[in-house]
Image 1 (tube, rainbow, N blue to C red):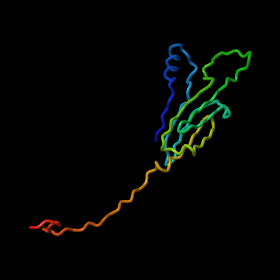
Image 2 (image 1 turned 90 degrees about the horizontal axis):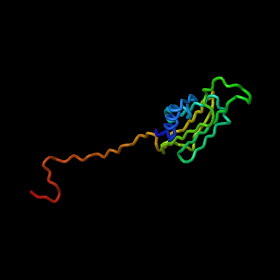
Image 3 (image 1 turned 180 degrees about the vertical axis):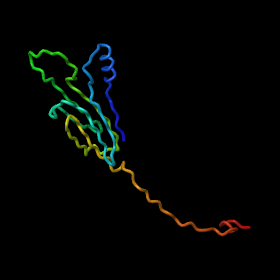
Image 4 (image 1 turned 90 degrees about the vertical axis):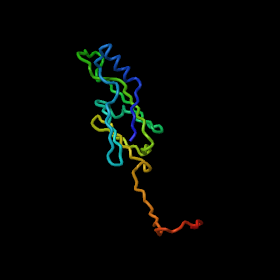
Amino acid sequence: MTVMRFDPFRDFDRLTEQLFGGARGMRTMPMEAYRRGDQLFIHLDLPGVNPDDVDLTLERNVISIRAERRSPRQEGDQVLIDERPQGSFSRQLYLGDNLAVDQLNASYEMGVLTLRIPVAEQAKPRRVQISAQPSQPQPVGASTPGKTR
């Protein structure tokens, strides 16, 4: 199964956060991916994100996920602690040709976005029939055609 993560700014964000002491947390979505039978499952954690604020697009074999978490604060609120990540989050997944991406199914429950993608028919293991041709036994000492003794 081919699933590759691609986030060119992840290391840069992590370094910036360490240098400037940012405690706002992650800027990407934690992910888990596994294959069960003929299905690939991908789970992305989006706690506190409204399902209407999740945008999922598929272009060829690239899945793009964008989500936004808004702060529940209102104007005039006095902030005492602010450690929860807010704002926009995005992630791209590059999928191999061995998946039937046109049959992708997405669901969202309890802050987890679940993608289910079937394995393409041409990528499934198949049994290959072996044809057996009966061999003709050669008598011992028989001459090969065209040769004389």
